[in-house]
Image (tube, rainbow, N blue to C red; front, side, top):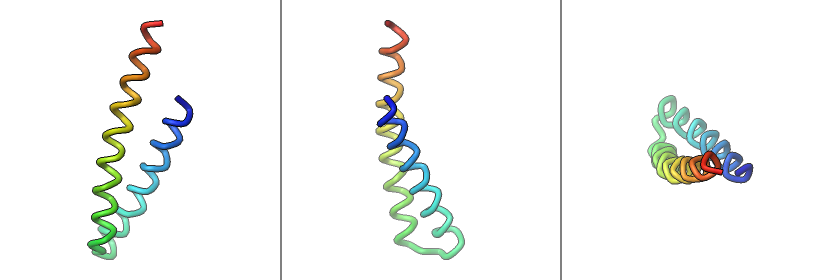
Length: 58
């Protein structure tokens, strides 16, 4: 679970950095990286939800 939380934190930082670069510098590449990070976060959040539900059933 801790590894998953670390991955989520990394992706959030990556998203934040690239979204900021996209909005301030209008960098298309940063926009693409930010969108990619949101897709990865979606997967990680689904995995977190799955694991947390399993833990709550113990």
